[in-house]
Image (cartoon, rainbow, N blue to C red; front, top):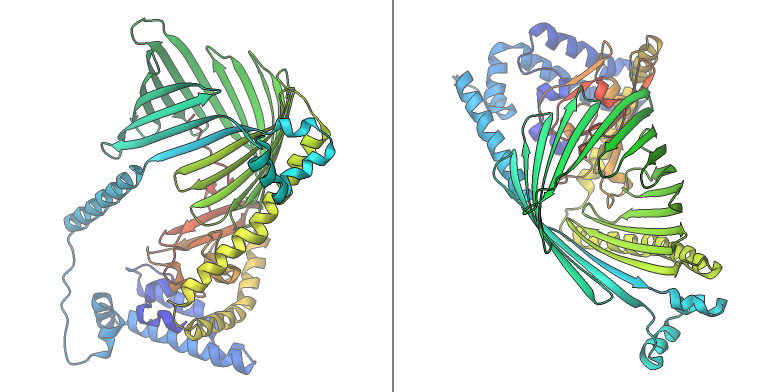
Length: 562
C-alpha cells in the first residue's frame, strides 16, 4: 500500500469524522489495535506486517490527539508534520463561503450533465428477409455458413442471399434549458417495400417537482398532432399518468390514464399492478423475483383490449461482466411468442445483443443489435413468415450458437488483447502494484479473525452482516485482478449494526483497501444481511456510505415513470 501513503488521509483510514472528539479518536485507535497489534500474531510474515500497520496507526493517533499537530495536519497535510520551528494560523471558511462553494460546485455538475445530455441519440434499423432460402431441401441451411457458396450465389447466380425489405432511421437531440427543463428535437424516416414516411417531433419535458413531471409533444407526419402527459408519484409506490392527444387543427382529443402500483411483498419479491384506460384498456399484474442481482424472474398476466396474455421472463446476469441471458414466453389471444436474447458487454459503452424469436402465427425471426454509446445499429432478419419449417428454427439456433461463440471466443478476447498491448506500452512496470497487492493480502489475513468474530456477533443479534463486498472496476473489459474482495475490511467498519463511512475521497485509502486499477473509475459493491433480510447496493468511489437502508432491499428500480 505504499502507492497511496503520500496521499493518506488519517481520518478516512481510521473512519472518523474530521471533527471527531478525542474520545472518538481513542475509540478508533483501540479498535484498530485489536486488529494490528503484533502480539496477536505468531506467523513471522504476518507479525512483521502487523507491526508496520500498528506503527502507522499509532502515529495517526498521536497526531490527531495532539491539538497543535492536528491543526497543522488539517491545514497542510502530512508533509507539514515533518517541519519544525514555525507556527501556523489556519483561515477557516465561514458558513456563507461553504454554502457559496457548494452552490458553485452544484451548478458546475448540472452544467456538465446538461452538456452530456446534448449528445445526439440515433438508431439505424435494417429489415431483411431470408425466408426464400428455406424453400429448398435441408442442405440449403448450410449455405449461409459456407463462404465460397455464399460468394458464388451473390456474384454469379443473380439471386440475393438476403432480401432488404426496408429500413428505419431515427435521430434525436436534447436541448436543455436548465437542470429541470429541456426540449428534445427528433426525426424518424421509415421505408418498407419502396414506400416511405417520416415523422418530425418536438418535445418539452419539465420536472415540476421531485414527484411530478410533465411532457408536451408536437408531432408532424403529414398532419400535425399535439399531446400532453402528466405523471405524479404518490408514496413511492403509486405512479399516475394522464395523457391527452389531439390533432392540431381538429379538436378531437383522446384520453389515456395509466396507474402503476408497486409494493414489496417479500425480501426478494415485488408486486406490480398496472391499469390503463382510454384507447387501449388493460390490467396487468406481475410478480418480480430477484436474487442478489444475479437472477431475475417475472411472471404476469395481462387482460385487456385488443389482446390478453400470460407471460413469464427470466434474466440471468453473468457476474460483473455486464453480459446477461434473457428468455421469455407469452401466450395469449395474439398467439405464442418465445424469445431467446443474449447480450454481451464488450466495453463500458459498447454491447452486442442477439435475439432469436419464434412467433406463432407470424414466423421465425432473428435480430442482431450493436450499441455504441447513444447510437444503435440493428438488423432484423425474417427466417420464415407464417410458416414454421424445422430448418428455419434450426438455422436460428445455429446462428445463436455462432454469434455467442464469436463474441466470447473471438471479439471480446481480441479486444482485451489489443487493449492490453496498447496499455502495456504506457504503464510502468507492475512492481509497485505487486507490492501493494501483497500488502493487501497480508492485511486481509490480519483482519480475518476479528472480522469473523464480528460477523458471528452481528448474526447472533440479527444485525448488520456483510456477506460480500467487492471494490474495483466493474466494466465488462476489466480482468478479475481489477476487482478485490474487501468483505472483511467492510465488516470491521460496522459499529452497533451500522456502517458509516465519512468523507468523499476515494475508498482506496480506507483501512484494508488498495487501488486495483489506478486512474480508472471504481465502485464498491456490498451485499449484506440486516435482520436476516438480504440487501445489496453499489456505491460510487467518492460516495459516502450509510448502512442499512430500506432502499437497498431490492435491486429492481421502484420508480416507473412510464
